[in-house]
Length: 139
Image 1: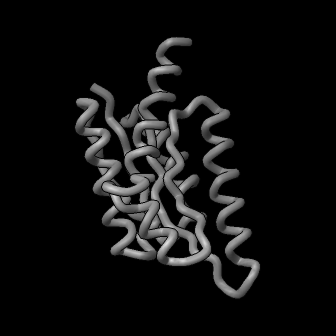
Image 2: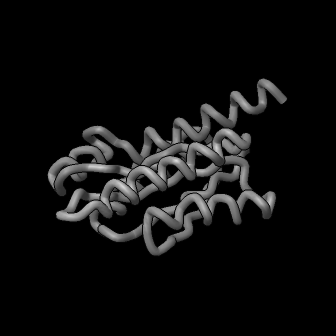
């Protein structure tokens, strides 16, 4: 049984609840255990994953959050840098599933977050578990 850490940026609580529901269901359905921690925003997720990885307590990581485009360039920075940070961790050998939604509006986020629609939280958890299995295959 793998131990999975879900790291969530809980800026939009109602959307995060849906992402968490999907991620937790996917992890439990696969027979694994999980913990959840919350960070201030999407930019902090890669750092939290890196810190948790150093502890050696977790086998895989699921990043969850929602970034909605606003009127400033901040959206591009948060979306790009959070993805870049998670990709760097993945390239370093961590099993990471990226469930940070980067959308134009709340309606898009809602469709993607709902477990009975696009279930991006569940997909991120399944991606993390798939990468963990691949990591085990290659030793």
